[in-house]
Image (cartoon, rainbow, N blue to C red):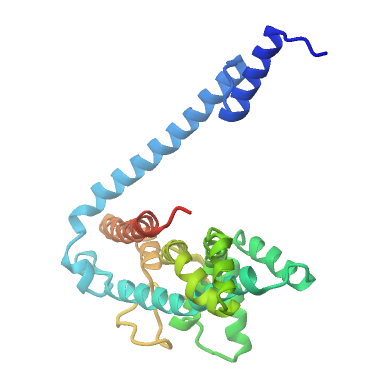
Length: 305
């Protein structure tokens, strides 16, 4: 017969509290030192980021004027602007969205809703998707360069070439985020649709995908914001640092804002550094707006099942 012990009951209660809250009341010297170092590292990183942002705003705010949007690059800093870079970024990122979003969403739907995960080929694809999300960006530039060479394209620094590299770069991000959004949809919705006679394709198109759309949109916007700030794969493709005309098509030569910023920061004149800071402010503003839109869509339309 079990004997009741107040000490044992207290120990069990402490274990239950620890298991439910995940917190321990013990404060050993090692844990205190670890937490202090963790907060110190966070403080140093945050202070460095704030200092860089303030320095960029101080240097570039005065040059954030209409000339930055309307003028072409020039060897004279007071007359220079980033018009071709802004239009080139719009062309490249827009084409990237057209290439990556349909393929990424369709691939995620197939892998999550229709594929047989017991097949070795599907398992290999899933493992490679997870690995591709950690590949350095410049590797995708090399891959796009190889694809263009294989197709016999002589001019590599064209809009479609840059978009191809960036599409491959953000494709794993779209695939993973879309699959997570699909997994968040309750299984009961699918079963209910199938129970009333809908086919699996109808269920996916009319039930699962609309319910997962906020998560899909959030991941897509975050992927495009990453593509907007990439320069390494585009430089490898020969992205121009001095462009005196507006990009006007998929086969047009291009430059983008990160490439233009890279060129201006490499100049010795302080005026070009101010231009680079102004363009950096503009680029950061666009990225912040895109990330803000992703957060708004997630908080406004995401359903709590």
